[in-house]
Image (tube, rainbow, N blue to C red; front, side, top):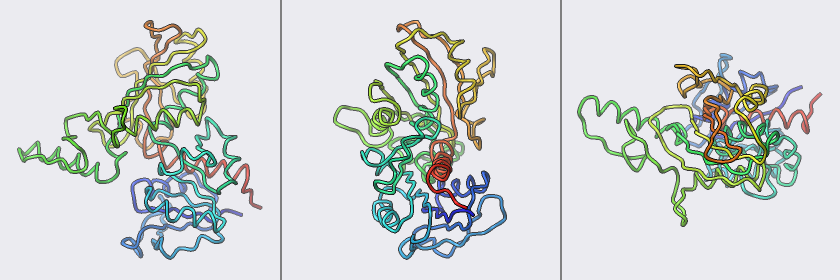
Length: 341
């Protein structure tokens, strides 16, 4: 027997990716529902490459009673309305928005990092998916933390426009085309021109000068891994369509060498180490698109701090940063709590 699974926000970038990954990983679905807002009702979308078409159902009229799992990729607004309804009707919600991440009675899960925390889902029937930049980072950090104890992390991100949704991707494409033909560029989704530029600003500014994206990386890492870890982030939007990159400087409690770290990362779950000290011996965002791994390259010792390492981390933000992690949570939930048959 399989599960009855609903994907909410199924017509968006992440929702479509969720459907694709459910099909790709052959998640045991007896029934799958594509759910979205009223403007998409009745349209048909693909269930991955299975050849199966799903007719989109209206979230306003969808009854979650009898459904096992709902993967929410609908944004905080609709999620605030419909996730509690789904949870109350007995359906376990796995939410990709930021709405529930820091709620103390909602588990925030990266399956390779803190699988045991999922046991707390019964308090509200809701599980939170972390921010895209946090998810790939903690996959890289966890095996190193277990071995050497992380004291402090300084991270600079290079985040693709797909992290801001379809509008961001469209704006990069349209601005790039406009610049090539000499047309004027007008920022709409972003605060400044994104084509052939970088913008050190993601989400709103907070009182201390950081942005909310940077704050998310700090507090989510503490909740997922260890509240004692100190972290400082600078989050930057770059003119890349898909794939987030991060430069990490890590200070450890114990002595560590680059070779020791490489050996640990080579065996770590969810990690693919590609670290040749030669031209092209590293991974870039273009190469990680469509893949499930968090790629690590450029591992080297940082002599500016005691017990320091630097490394480069790249992942497909629509997959590990969102859809894949949500499906992996569903798989973990099935193994531990929703066993069928």
